[in-house]
Structures are given as C-alpha cells and as structure tokens.
Length: 447
Image (tube, rainbow, N blue to C red; front, side, top):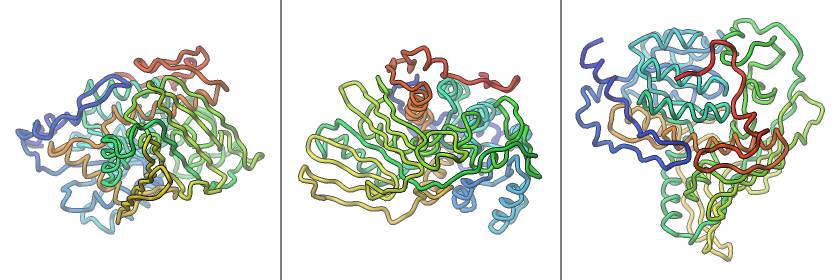
C-alpha cells in the first residue's frame, strides 16, 4: 500500500465530533477535509453478516461512480457466503474473498471500512474491534445490545476517531429531512407529542428444541460475545430475534429504533426522564416466541414533551393506515411522516400539504433496502473521503437507541422508572441490574 494511501486512511477518519450520551452532536464541516491526501481514492470494504439485509448495500457498492471495491464477504454460515458471492458475482468483474471470521478480515490493512449486519449481540463488540483495527464502520441497528454497550460504542468513536454511521437510513431521506426542518421552524406550532408505530403480521415460530447445528454454521462464532450454550433448532436464521435476550433486542431494537429516532429528531429532544411500558406476548400463545409481541411505551421528556410507541408485531390490524411511521402533534396542526414522505394537517384534520418520494425503501418486509439505504451508504463513503458529514453519526443513533433499551428494561422488570437525562442512568436498582449483560470470557468489548 502506498504512503499516500496510508495517509489517506489515517487522516480520513473524523466523521463526527464525539460527545457524551444525551447531548447534541455537531458534525464537522466537510471543509475540514479539504487537505486530505487522496480524497478521491477507492474505498475498500467488507460486509459482515450476509442475511436478509446485505442486498440493500448492493446498489451503492456496484455503482462505479462510488469508487468502492468489495474485498470480503463474511458470514458464519457457508451457504450465505456462497449465495452472496454468486449474487455480487453477477455485477462485479473481480473475485471477492469469502471468510467466516471477521477478525481475519480486520487484520487486512487494505480494508478501509466494514458494513456490519450481524445479529444484534455482535454489533458493538464487532464495531469496536473494527475501529481498533483502523476501520470505518457502517453499523446496522440496533447499534448496541444493552445500555453498557450503547455508551461504549460512542466512547469508542471518540477514542478511535473513525467514521461510524448508524443504519437508521431514514436520516438520509430528503422528504424527512425537509419536514423535520419545517417542524422545527414552527410549521405546526409548538410540538408536544409524537406517536411512533410499527404494525406487522409475523406468524408462528417453532418451539426451540435441542438439535445439531445446521451444516456449514460456525455456531461458536455465531455466539461470539454471548455465553456458550447448545444449539436449539431454528435459532440461527432470524428467529434469534424472538428466542430470549442472548442475541436479540426484541422488536424495540429491531424496528422501533427507526421510528423513535424520527420522533426524537422531530421534537428536538435528547434522553427521556421517565419511561412506562405495557407489553406482553398476546398472539400465538403456545408457540416458541419468547419475547413480547405487543408493546405500548410512553417516554416523558423535559418541558413535558412525550413520545409514544405503539408496536404490534403479530396483529396486522392497520389502525394508522400504514405499516410504520411517526405522527408529530403541534399546537397548530400535525404531521404524518414515514419512509415514503410526509403529509401536513391543520387542526381540523384537513390535509394542507403532501410530499411523497418517487423512490422506495422497504417498510415491513424482511431485509428492506432501497434508495434511502443507497443514499445512506453513499453518505458514509463521502464522509470517509471528507466531502460530506454523516447524516446519522453514532452519537445521534445511540441516543435514540437508548429509548429502546429503556423500554425493554421496563418490560423485563414489569414497572416504570425515572432516568437521569444527563447521564442516562436509571433510578431503579432492578433496572440498573439489566444495564449490561454477561459475556463469554475473552469476548467482553474493551477500549
């Protein structure tokens, strides 16, 4: 690797200015990067996690205008590596290396950045390992498995000065950015509440039973930071979301992340002061689903602003007319915003403006993908080059992610609690007992 290239990778690192949890982040101006050597050089990337999400990255990667090269495809399941290699092989004229262990890839000094789309429990530990190896990170939601990791991921970005984009891609929506600015400029008056929602009709899942791990699966590496346990049937392929807290973060981490981020952005709030939750498993009562499948949460902020969450994973009644979105209420009107655009209503409930995107982005379908992910990825590339600033720097993403962790904790201990909005700490002993998790020895994320 040339000296100029090494200098480029070393210097093209400061995508955001790190700040403490709960405070506003100010991204550095792109002008700060005007002297970076080789700012137009190719960015070499790897993808870790080749399940339902990776196809969303394909369009920005194969577009020659973005000047990136995919060096590695990484997954702990051989069939997924092979499938992704065949998929990308249709559109690139070079050989992509396949690997099941991300640690081998991180040792390759030619890799500049990693897209991480693994199960939730890998996100923060994997991202910290990547930053320590000098890589920039596009980190899918949730950016953390628990509140301990939520603070660690921000501290790591501050320490290692890497570009870390969280994968809440609606931050790259032209329409969402436009309406948030209008809301903050007073188009619906003084805002006081936002209702974020997600409606899906997920079906029954099998009862997990002891079984041999599937052929081609590195079960030990799948578990990674999680304490070791025997394999249970159908765990590895998406249902890890619903089989306890070892790997997943339930629907809050899986989907509420997106809408709560938009709600917090619109209201201009940071961390809540109180959370109260009503949750339970209410559908397919005798199947293997081990989490809540219905949750209503209420977050109270300073100045009495409120964010409500209405999540129904397995009851498809479409009470809002959309599968997902956010409604913002103000003293002079309201706004409905989702991935497709927005609509403004006056106090009579009459529509006064409607702006819809001509593009598309997955809503409730598994995997998602579309123009928002493409814009989000290109923004990541251009921030590495110093031409743009991140639309979702990890400090913003993690602040929104904290809300999902608070709700999950309140659900698990069965009671509401107050929060120190400056430190993020919970004013409840039982709640603080769930601040972190138990790690497999040697896998604890460390700075």
